[in-house]
Length: 343
Image (cartoon, rainbow, N blue to C red):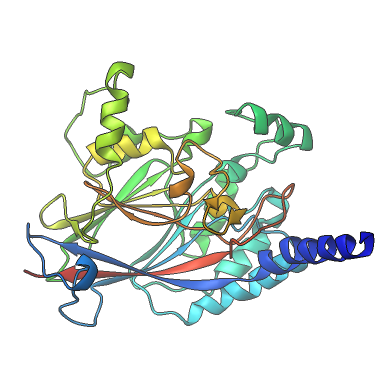
């Protein structure tokens, strides 16, 4: 009996600590958008593609937590192989590496990646700080907003720029791709809300001259109703563009409820984020056990069509240095295709 239990525990250990963290996959994600109030629908109320060609393609990467161990070497090879993809944009949503000594290894891994219109990064908590073991343990009980050991994010941003990857720290960019189907692409890159680095007003000031004097957070008395309205899932798997002639995309490491509510008020169409690692431990029929931030576990990974925006939370490709395991939660890069639905 004891031998059988030991054998089961050994198998679970090998699966969770050795196999699953390096079981990388490239996930296919299709997002349907439209300009009109009506759309063509097929079975199960899913939008019907008018043609087989997407109007935009994105490669979404997140949460490398890059190290030079055996798993890190496999990740290095997997990411470099993604250079074979032909995409319009590459979005990387934070936690690239956990300390400065691996920056050059990161640069070597990312340098072959290509995108037609641009490559953009936002930072996560591990890009800013290298946590101590004591800080990691304390953080599980009470969320900290800063840590003792700061990383040199200015140097990392410079090295990323050297290979054509732009870091957006509460900044925005407007790109016109000259497409009839899609007008301007607005990319809003936000620093990490979980450590109070986010500044939504500053980010939008780069693309808008309109001064919004409304408070960033609703009053507590209104919060519950506002939350229910913002996080209302749609039955139709299609998003109506909020701003005629433009697609507004936000990049944010942590899918934080309050930040998402603020972005919805700014008429953002699609939010890309990471951080959760998909819960890292998932159970059949249950899903993620924890989300690791202020968002419900049912939204810890996947594509969600809400009433006013679309949220995509990737499971990411890595794990923190003090929790190098996954269970039933395959690490992923995501190939995102945007399809335009015409009435």
